[in-house]
Length: 150
Image (cartoon, rainbow, N blue to C red; front, side):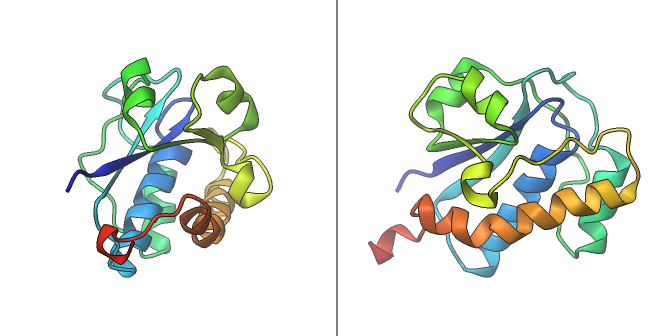
């Protein structure tokens, strides 16, 4: 069985997309859904940057596990091409990428996820809440389930 890749994309890969990556991983684990690899990247990422401290704090507050060794990655065409689904944090980001597998998170959340970078904790909490709230719909629309259940 081959893993399907789900890739979250934002601007710098230090706030929204790593929070979405951690949140979806936790939800898939909770539902015992396997055969998916979840990752993230940034359109203008400074490769190797750590996750924003407020993003880490928001995840800890929500009880969501994340990699302490997370490092930002810059998005490449190969990442987009190799993914089952590419989920961008804004409609503008999704529009700038090519591929039938590219979606805006607004498809699931009903709105873009504003960039909390440089803002206070409440902006990070709000972004994470919106991401977590749309995960059930994301899982349903993307038809994410265990392969042996199909």
